Length: 237
Length: 237
DNA sequence: GCAAAAGTGTTATTGTTACACCCATGG
DNA sequence: CCATGGGTGTAACAATAACACTTTTGC
Image 1 (cartoon, rainbow over the protein chains, first blue to last red):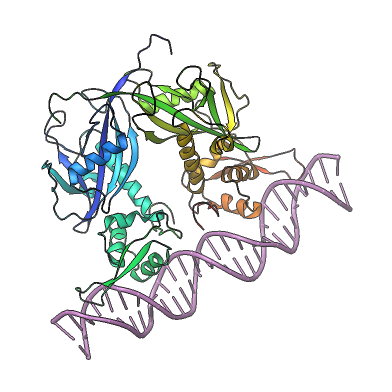
Image 2 (image 1 turned 30 degrees about the horizontal axis):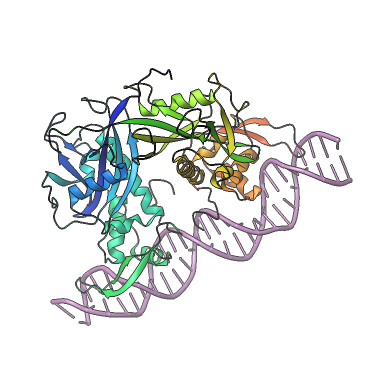
């Protein structure tokens, strides 16, 4: 570190892995790039810091609002990882701070005032390379999905996929789709209702469906699940 | 995003939370700052990218080598989180990509060719505010310690605290000190030797001590622990 | 032999899994 | 009254925790 050494200045991008469960599939919000590099390719939504003084976490929240039109509601946003390889972007040195967002099934795919070409794409199509992404976004998405899968076990993250009021079956559906495995409805019911402060009964019940009405719940205050909801395959067991 | 908008350029720092177990305590490697801001204060070791083209992960490995003189050996290095508040550094806009490193008890505290004023400080002294750190390093350390604690449960991280050859008691010692709770030696022994590919017997045995010689092990190939080693307090249970 | 630490066996308890069974509604 | 999902009971099984007990060394 000599005294005449210039500290390198780099651009900071914020990229979002926004996941939801839609049409019985785990889907990710992607945009079609309009400009080079990778023009026409699908990419994670994101952008550069809006100003020299914008907080990075704040920038992530701003981008999410721009893309989805959502804000406080049922919304989970956490930092995922930072990607700092020197050649990620062919134009200039850019490091990307990636965030993982979980949202409920939105009424309109590309709502919000921005009207960019954002759309939901099944995660399986990307991970199996039937669709490929710009930059290192494939890797970022893959990291984000794995993070979401493991968070379902130990945290109350699954409720972020659900609307404000939901049934135990709705919640089980999230687990089954994100993990890609079926769970016993009886045991699942007992487990999740047994975790303290995970689910709060609202008193309401569903009325439609073919069978017995299901009790409605809203998310509780617990963020860590005491007896975790473990997946059989995957991590271990 | 108007076309005449200038993308903000920021400096990228790499900060290290280097942990070890020394003198029966969890300790962190800290440096005494020689220049403003926070001159004379303790801080996490770290620095800016060495060049416009240096990979961020590479920079973390380089800083670790500079500070400890270590390189490949028993060494764990993983990205922790990125800290991007606009006022972290009063001089200019700096975002810090923090890394967590775990090293075995080193023969010499401030070895290596750098000869900076690096030294080991018990983590408890910092977390209880008997010693305070520069910038937001207190928060970063706290996040790093929590990450290390939770990684002990599900990953083979604990072996990174140990020398190349170690006993089950050495390993248990790591868990007890990092978690701050005592564990039953008998059950611990059975558990860790029962996890597939966690520990590999070398055939050697200790010779000193007061009691029966202990078998020596080296780290196995497992990085995820199938039946996890759970702590009683803390997370849950 | 005695102290000290390593390591094994055994049992009570707890958590999980599998599945039989009852409940409440719409048609 | 039957199909359909919601929800409870229960027994077999697996993991864990507590602790008695045996092993192997140094002195």
